[in-house]
Image (cartoon, rainbow, N blue to C red):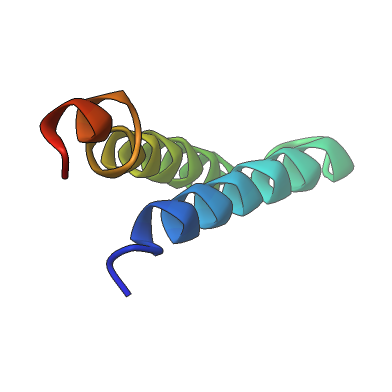
Length: 65
């Protein structure tokens, strides 16, 4: 479960970000939910990438984790 957590966070963050961009593009006046979805998507992408780097990325290889 925890081994797949960075990938789940990256995928869900990317989906939220892409869907918020699509919602904003389809509606002329972007609703507030699109803004919050975009912010949450970027936060999840960043957190997932950070977890990936510490578990399997550069830092994980150096420490043997």
